[in-house]
Image (cartoon, rainbow, N blue to C red; front, side, top):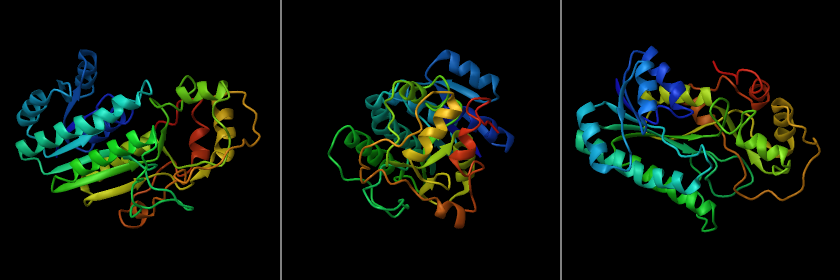
Length: 291
């Protein structure tokens, strides 16, 4: 296939690009900056400098590339800018989808998340509705995801990758990353909130596989949703952060329930290499567990 990769220099995109090329796909990858374009070209992609908020430029780039599929891996999370990330999901996705329509592209694979579901007592599957909350800052995130997923679903073929919390190279979960800083400051309580994780290399593997998956949302998570009381001490040890291993207080919010990846395993025959954060976290202080 010819893949139009939006977000080629991001945490997932930089690992996905070589997988796409190795599988024999042609890739047109985009980056906002000239440095990113050079990195993409050096990696073997056709590269385009593009601002996803520049609607005419997105339409022109899509028309010139004439791809078979759009791979949407754009985020703005490096600086924990939730407003900028929401804008990408709203406006950036809208521009990509409309450009795809105009260029006759029928298929999109788009990055979403697996912790936007409404509350419950067990891990959520893909049939669980998204959270109807109006409480901020969560409402901004969920509203943006609704817009992203609805826009993507306008194309005849659309796969929504609802990733678990990403860890590994290029994410917040590295020795010098945001989560390690929060641990050092004692701002990450080891309480009852449940998280489903996903190693970033498994996120890239799933995106490659999704080129062939049927339309719809897919939870892409590891096999062990866990409360922070279990994973925070393990993460702290892996990152070399001297945080006490005792259980913290607090109450689990209803949406802090984790997600289940049974559909991917049983129907799509896909599973993560890092099937538990317990093994994946152990490698974060070395090479990050890159496959």
